[in-house]
Image 1 (cartoon, rainbow, N blue to C red):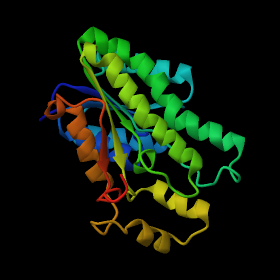
Image 2: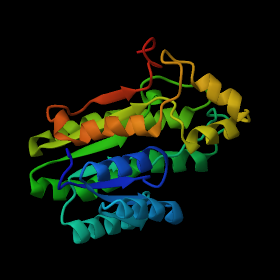
Image 3: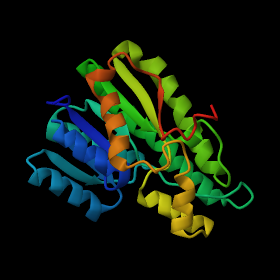
Image 4: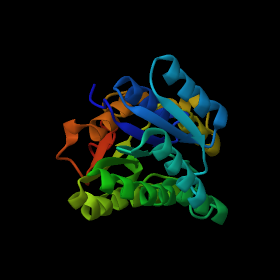
Length: 255
């Protein structure tokens, strides 16, 4: 098992890509700390892992609050003794142009999608430094590399994640801390249906349009989780500062 003996902290771990990654990491030998604002769903993921013989705990947090991030990391260290993998996956979306976007929406998306990475990494990196290394994976997006219509703040936030990832890789490579990000394309999660709702489009029509890429379908959370596993494991031991696109070819003709 490639993650045997490791400890992974996953934000946004109650659903979608985060949930799929938590379950996969547990199967591959890692202890898992699931962090999410949804207490019921997050606790269910931890229980599912425990029933399968894995080690997992859940902590209800707001990843935009420094005190919550500090509490989360302190509990992880107290329970498991280390943090080998940090998956900064928490994210939200607001589909709107600049003209239709409220200031509160701007601030909230940037806080959840970008500030949370800063806050949690600031807490985790000192522990990784003491341990002699680690792996940090951030969730960006294909729209962090190419623009999308009616998604101004989401694109801005995910573009920031891509360059924040590269800057962190430069700063912390000497401490053997690898920092990478994944750039998923449209993935079959609840967030995709939230987009349809925000745009006032029918689910079926929106999902069919999202599937128009070379592979002709949406991605699954399990497929994205496999990419995260690669970046978390020693299989990617010489990989840092990269933005790994996992999108069924959606950006192949764009960038």
